[in-house]
Length: 156
Image (cartoon, rainbow, N blue to C red):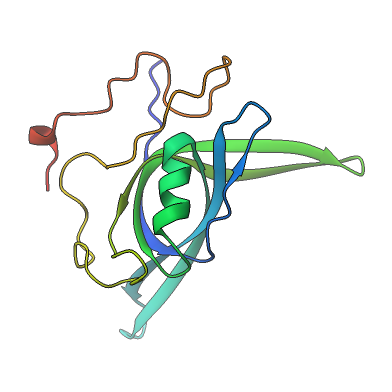
C-alpha cells in the first residue's frame, strides 16, 4: 500500500527560535507556527480561526531559522507529520507535530513581516534544505529523497 506524508504551512512564528545542538553536534530547534484560516460562519460573518502547530527543524535549516527569524516572522514550511509518543507518570501521551524539511523566509532580517513575498507562497524550492543527519537517525529527508518535483511542476 502506498503512502504519502507532506505538509505545507504558511504562518507566523509564535516565539523566537531557540537553537540547540545534539551531543553529536546536529543543530535542532523547535518553533511554533500560527496559521490563520478565515471563513464565514452560519450567520454570514467572517470568523478567523488560528491553528498553532509545533515544528521541529534540523541541521542547517534550524540554524537558518535561528539566525534570520524571530517571533512574528512569516514563514513557509514544507515537511512531514510525525507522531511523538512518551510515557509520564504511568500515562501514555502522544502529540502530532511537523518535521520541517524545507523553509522559505518571507520577511526581511530583523524586519519581521516586512519585505519578502507579500504573503504569497514561494515559487520554486525552499532555500534551506535539511542537512544529512548522519548516525542512521531519521531527522530529515529519507534516504534517496530527490527533493521533490522540479520547479516547472509546481502549480503556482
